Amino acid sequence: MKNNDLLTPILGFLQCETPSRWLEEAVKAERLAVLLQDHLICELKAAQTAMYLLRRYACDQESSATLLHWLKPFEDFAYRFNGDVQSLKQAEKLNKSIIGRSDFAHSNLIIDRMVLLIREELHHFCQVLEIMQQRGIPYENITASRYAKTLVQSCKTHEPQILIDKLICGAYIEARSCERFAKLAELVDVELGAFYVSLLRSEARHFADYLELAQVMSKTDIKPRVDFFGKLEAELISTADEDFKFHSGCPV
Image (cartoon, rainbow, N blue to C red; front, side, top):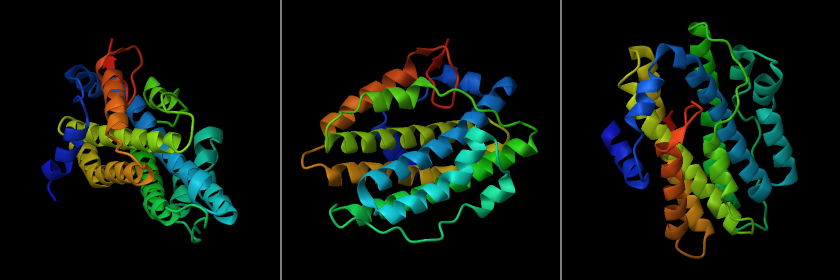
């Protein structure tokens, strides 16, 4: 599948494209470190979000503990500066099966989609870390941008709508990541550009999986909530933002 085929549904879903001012800022040499550091943390946060959905809704107690154990080396590295890329690469694989809860109708569907997503995000985490090390960029625990926080804070607080809203937010985050990787790939050096292109297929599938799950979980059409979060997401991307991160808005 060509990149254009991957991006067509993404661009049709997002309500705005990344502003040229963000791209102009992103390709500056002095921005590379924060761009890669934030990308690294975004991969972990994506895995954590998927793990939360599995533990909260889909898997049994033993599987919940298995998931926590799976992510622990990556969280130890990110938050406690313990470990290295070699130990993390050994920890990428999930060694036990995740068992679904019998009282949740769609547990197996969520498990199938989210376990694959976690596996890919952890692999990307190791890839980004290797790129940083090759370029002499140290890992630093940086502050989060307003983007994902604002989206999640706008979710409803009652079930099942909170689950549906979080799945829709996940779709927007993955779609925006895919769109930005595609645009950056044309502007950065060949090696980094090739890496960004390699991420497009999985990011596009993650977007589609989140959107599919949101509709499966909902008894009504999700379009009104998709439109709501689409407007909010576009506002976060297109309005002035004093912070610069991978998902930040238009640079001041």
